[in-house]
Amino acid sequence: MTCGMPRISPDAASRLSARARVYRQLSRLLIVVGVLFGAGALFTYWSVVKFEDRMRTQYAQGLLSEVSIIDEAIDLWVGTQTRSIEKIASNPRVVALADRLLEEPADAPGLIRSPVLRELRAELAPKLEPLEGEGIFVIGPDRLNYASMRDNNLGVENFLLAEHPLRIEAAWSGRTVAIPPVPSDVPIADDYAENRSLFLVTPIRRDNGTVIALFTIRYSPTQTVDRILSVQDDRAVDLYAFDRHLHFTTRPRVTRTNRELLNPGGEFRFHTARVAVADKDTVTPTQLAQAALARHDGFLAGGYASYHGRRVIGAWVWNDTLGMAIAAELPEDAFFATFADFTATLLYIAIGTACVLAFVLVCTIALYGRLADRQSEVIAVDGLTGIACRRHMDDYLAEQFSVFERSKLPLSLALLDIDHFKAFNDQYGHPAGDECLKAVADDLRHACERPTDLPARYGGEEFALVLPMTDHNGAVRVLSRFKEELRRRKIPHARSEAGQYMTVSAGVVTVDASNQFPSPKALIDEADRNLYLAKDQGRDRIVASGPEDPQPAEPPCSIPLKKCA
Image 1 (cartoon, helix red, strand yellow):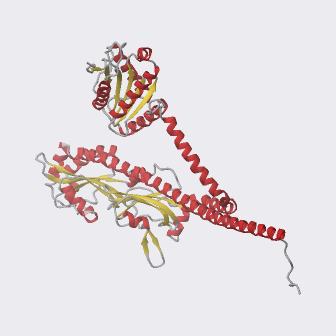
Image 2 (image 1 turned 180 degrees about the vertical axis):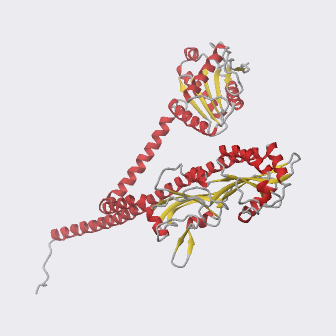
Image 3 (image 1 turned 120 degrees about the vertical axis):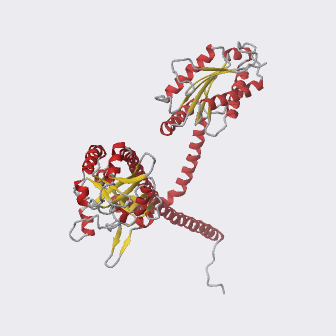
């Protein structure tokens, strides 16, 4: 009997084997595609998350830059006002009147009737107006108010002692101090700051330097800190300041919605409000407020709940002068709603397409990135000498000129020309001329001391040297070192009129805060004029101009160097 199983021909078995191999290859391909698909989806999600993190960080860094500028502006205002109040307090007439007033009885009725107080008020009133001061105090050694523009706070202990005793004691020791906005004893007519005042306090001294009293000027926050903060006109950004007790010292930019969150009646009382998140039973300082009280600058890009209940990103700077923090906050929903829609759409599209293309795209980006880097390197380098080309030098000079305009650190530029190079080519041939150009480029490179120094081939036999943060003498030293290196080579030049060896002439210009140039082109033109002066004076020399030459109309200084023996 034969077996009941059917017989399989060799051809059919071969076809089945081939089909099995195809299935195995297809399954492997599907596994690879699946892995790539999953990896692509994960990579896309990771990229979106990282992109959001970068956006958040950039926004937060922008806020930090903004509050840093405001912090500098506040310090500048305080410094300007400090000089003005010290000038008033040192006025001999003011010192004499204060000294006489301290001899009066320290009771309110007596001080109110005092003719010395009337004279002092008349003397100080016109001096306060340019400073936008709202009032004054003269505080005596017994810490009582001996003078004020108002009668109702005379003869009593100055309330600043209770608010900031350490700062008042510092003023008695001879320093001018600033008092951050505090609840004052006298309201100031204002739309919202009716109970806040900012003070500057400086000592009044006799001729022998003895501190006899303190002179204090009162300012309205709306005319000082608030006005500086209001320069920023982006209404989406909430700018405000607060003190070490978490009380607002300026008015935050709260909308009606925010007011309703803070108070049921919709009225925001910023004098009693705090930089905190209010719950039913607790009041917790915001994350920004807690960090700011550590008295260091920073930002929070990850988001947190602000005092009005909305999530924000924020940045802050602690101002030591006024003892308060300056904060800027950006609502997340205002700037990230569009980003969230974009993220969702991108994820949906990425699930279908990004996984298949991710590998090819990454490889292509990497390849083109390397090619672009290599191409930029090739474009920036002169093919013969291996140093920077003219185009790269122009870009670098413009960049360093912008740095100079911001920092006012000196910047030097030198233009160099090989003396009688055409005659050298005619005598020794172009290959020898190329070798000479390479030698000059090598010596220029070796003469540079810092990585920021840039030697470049300017064109033909001309070279350039950009020396950031280098003054007149430093530039001359670099060029002298270069010429010494070239002299040691002793490259023969039988047809040179400057000597028997190859020589170079150079024109140098240095710009710093004392001699302004409007543009990089003006620097190049000045260096070119000096180069031609070097040639006219016999070549093989350096002609430099800059802050060492305070008279522009006079010819630049000429620095001949020793010719080769």
